[in-house]
Structures are given as structure tokens and as C-alpha cells.
Image (cartoon, rainbow, N blue to C red):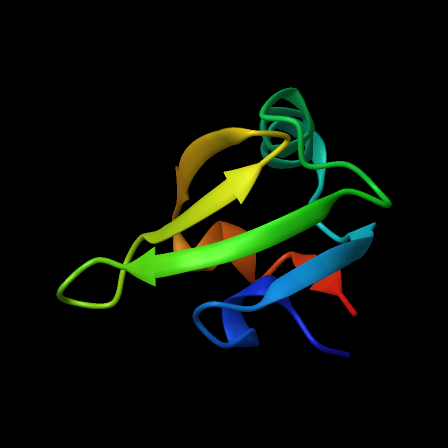
Length: 73
């Protein structure tokens, strides 16, 4: 299983499944990250956390702990 956390910088990936539960899953879905959405990994912060992403035409920062719950291809 490849997660968003493991995707290389500069790549574009497609969401396959969300593995989080409860409030975390709901928050991720509210940010526009749902099954089938393409996400471009733009860069990481200087210390490696969070990730900066482009989702549905807007920029989003996401912690690596949350990114690990998003399965991508």
C-alpha cells in the first residue's frame, strides 16, 4: 500500500482510499481529499512536516501523520 506520505515531491497521485476514522477522516474529506481526486505534491516544509499539496486547484498543507492515512496510486 502506497500512501500520500511516501509519494515523491513533484509527483501527481490519485487517491484510492481513506483509512482514517471518525473526525480525522471527516476533516480530510472536508478539505476536498476524496476517492478519485488527483493530488500534486508540491514540497515539504524545511523539517519535513507538513507537506504542501495542490488539491482541486487550491493549495493545502497536510501533516505527514494525516497523509499516512491516505492510500494513493
